[in-house]
Image (tube, one colour):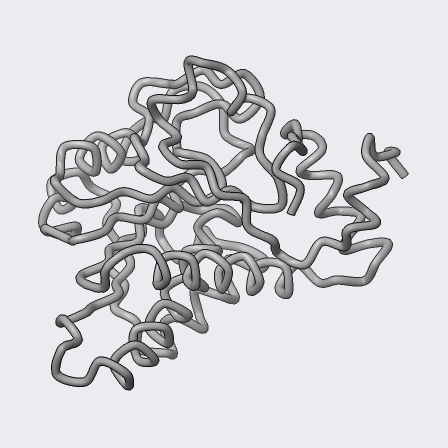
Length: 238
């Protein structure tokens, strides 16, 4: 991946659209690639343990369900090498939206995760949120993606605030929830990540000094977007 490439919110949408419509790469394939890339990075760079993935409504939430499935497989692979030295692990999802509100690729991957027996807690009230999240070793932020702007509200804000207060390690997928990917302005609250695993390319807002405290280490991960497509930037609208 090209670490010097920065995309706006509109360009992110256009890259995905062109990959799907012009290149024939389905959204499901892109989401699968994204989730697998994130899971592999986490398995290589962070210790195994109790992993809680916070999922929202859109494609960012859909990524979370794919991450859960692939992270289970990564932990199984690690256990085959480490044997009794492998720490106890669990991968679980806390969703702050009802499954019925999911659509498209996110809905499909929720169903796959459910059929795969991945523990999924649906929490739509703040009172139940703390108990559902518990005391994980690692929190993965898949609440709000690049399309979000402004201050997170309601249970999204509560989940972010609680995550920031816990002693767990924190990883954001694509963009920390609450951070505007175009301006780099942090909403109240914003997920404070020690690593942001951003997909395809960095986002223009990441270059702003105000974004740095929330991003942590920025790692660009591929999702199968062709290099030729990225080299054609700026993207034409058709």
